[in-house]
Amino acid sequence: MADKLPARLAEHPTVRKVRARASRKPGVLDADWLREICLAAGADDVAFASVDNPALASEVEHVQAALPGTKSYISLVVKMNRDNVRSTARSVANQEFHRSGEVLNEAAHRIVRQLQDAGYRVLNPSATFPMEMDRFPGRIWVVAHKPVAVASGLGVMGIHRNVIHPKFGNFILLGTILVDAPVSSYGEPLDYSPCLECKLCVAACPVGAIGKNGEFDWQACSVHNYREFMGGFTDWVQTIADSADGDDFRSRVSDSENASMWQSLSFKPNYKAAYCLAVCPAGEDVIEPYLDDRKGFMDLVLKPLQDKKETLYVLPNSAAKAHAERRYPHKRVKVVDSGVGGR
Ligand code: B12
Ligand code: SF4
Image 1 (cartoon, protein in one colour):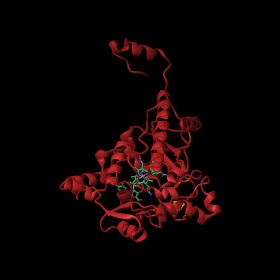
Image 2 (cartoon, helix red, strand yellow):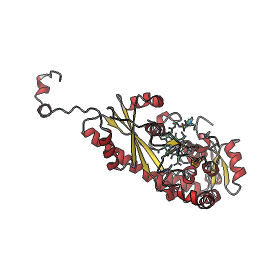
Image 3 (cartoon, protein in one colour):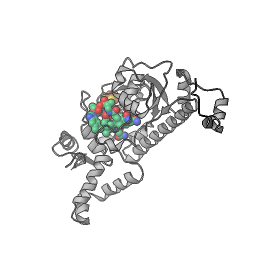
Image 4 (cartoon, helix red, strand yellow):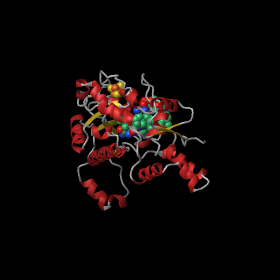
């Protein structure tokens, strides 16, 4: 029953038009219809989870803050083009990450528009960056896409802690839409892990961030791979501030490092590695060349990344530094500050 409105409001043209039409009361979202609109919008796979799913308890306060009344997650997958991710040319791999992120955000934007027009309250947090930097170095992400994808049944986290889709492997980016309505049916987690435990990801990570048992040294990853993001950027600025003059600065930071930072600031930030994803042979669409010739697959995909001459960024006295120096004598190992939490 609608509120009785004061006469001035009741007579307003907008109110009269709205009151004259049949009122739309969006209800339970039909899972088949929702899946269809998500695929038509550009997602390569999609599944749903309830906000009450106990496996996602850690997300509740964050998603309720973002969209009060959230009842369901729509978990989206967009495929990445594999050989781009595998390339030793960082510009090629980075373009693939960024473009796939845009495709995902564009798909999510279209889905949100369609659900909004059908009368739902609905929101799409960014798939990757930008994130909530006022919370840095705390939890800067609005929703953690990986656990949502796992709970919805879109894949399982491999040893390298990325979600592996049973068909597309780990060559995917993930996104999540929050909506204020229940969905008619929710997904179930997969009953097996697509991870083969081949440990190629362990062998590929230049800073030893991935342990054989699946422990993950996120700081080692972050200091190297994210050298031109957040803390790495702060360290670059600190170096400028600490330098006596231009010559001193250029003795500390090479021309190529400065040009790379410029490129990250002008276009989108360069990831330095992502080799764990590049080498992963898991997934029905990915695995065949590995099954046909495992040594050949490693020569083709793993070795060029291991052989690449590049700079590895590590913290002083870290396990990452010891790993990089021991395993990659042909790569330059540069000790840096994390740029986080003082000096
Ligand atoms: C934070 C973050 C990172 C951090 C931490 C990674 C991590 N394992 O959590 C860092 C900076 C290291 C990172 C690196 C990368 N990431 Co990232 N990252 C995220 C982010 C924002 C949240 C991840 C998350 O849910 N963490 C919490 C829990 C669920 O993760 P967890 O693995 O169970 O737990 C670990 C963390 O909590 C970490 N940790 C513990 N304390 C702290 C404290 C801080 C401050 C941080 C940062 C981490 C951290 O250690 C735990 C043990 O592994 C998501 C985007 C999003 N909004 O979801 C993308 C995301 C997970 N990243 C992604 C990618 C692709 C990458 C990179 C390949 C980047 C690249 N292009 O080079 C690497 C791969 C590193 C790896 N092997 O995991 C994809 C993964 C896609 C997939 N197939 O699963 C996501 C989903 C982005 C997306 N939209 O697709 N990432
Ligand atoms: S590279 Fe091998 S061990 Fe690592 S996640 Fe992929 S399948 Fe699992």
